[in-house]
Image (tube, rainbow, N blue to C red; front, side, top):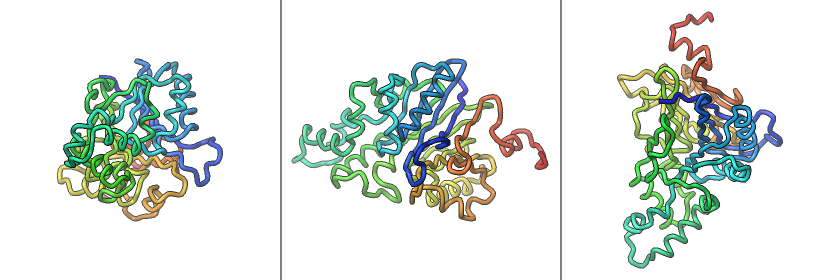
Length: 309
């Protein structure tokens, strides 16, 4: 099984950083196989950095996985397409599931045609991807590169919230503590070095992250490090008697400027004490390699290196 390296892009060298909303862009790659996936791409400047990376690594095309269709996860994908750098695009293609959505709506007045139009109106930017090699994550999961696995949410949960968005004519109303579109962000696991795995969750609500967190050495904190989400993740781990929070490195992709969804509150909170947290807002681009450990903390975990290193 391929072992991947991963880069969480920061905003070093970007123009107009203050107050801007660049969002996430995460590069997953195996250099020897020239295999690559981009998980979300929230701005054209992220896309330009991806293109530079591909040129440096002599990778001609990358697959893309869009966790959900908020613009700060989507906007750079169109630039990658324009530059002919994209192969397959994995996301949720709601029109493929109209019959199931109609069942959940349970309203005889709703027609197939009207429901399709409503979906296209609500999730309009996914429609912008038409004409590319689109893959529905629930039907085409098996086409993901070996070593990258779709974790959730389950199809029923996804379609329940799509039906709710149609009923309310909005994807920005809340489900728990997240918006309807954030709550069901697609989550993937990535095979890393030494049988370690990384979990990427986008802006998912913690209630929809149902995998066993102890299976993952690296965990992306949801919604750009939002405090409430981070606290819930930490609590889930601390409540597991077989787990130890010291066994995890938490990664925050916070390129959101000044945002209530960002990491500012978390990084000021005492809850972060004793946690190994990497944050693009503080650390810039964060890389996890296949042959070297990214930090002294991770080296200690693997080899018991003394704290005086």
